[in-house]
Image: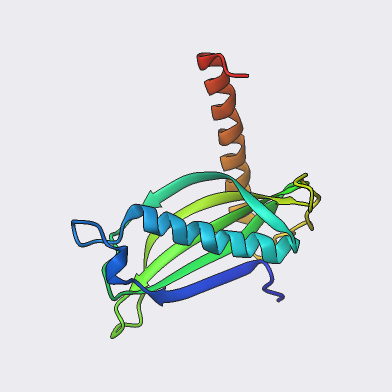
Length: 159
């Protein structure tokens, strides 16, 4: 199976990544998620891309300095110009082979042309059962984000 819809970053959590509590900053984890998902979107679309939304970012477990980090970003659904990417962050100790999930979320990116207008992206067709299930969840996340936008606009009078 062609894996052009998946990107994986691996690196060690560094001392400069931590907060006062000695755990990796949530903002640093969000940066890793954004970087991996951007690489995934750009690889898929072969275009410059921008973040549209981040949905359901979950902080499940803390990450410690020195742990091996894996950030896996994969296209799970495409619209005309958007790519919905499922991102999972895992951490493991160097002496252990078992990684645990620390974070997960959906990130939506849009591909742009040289003038900054959105452009059509290649269609992603889920093949495995897991990809099909993630595509369904991604559409639910997309629908929720649209409803939230509508609710904000109606409640706060935004246009």
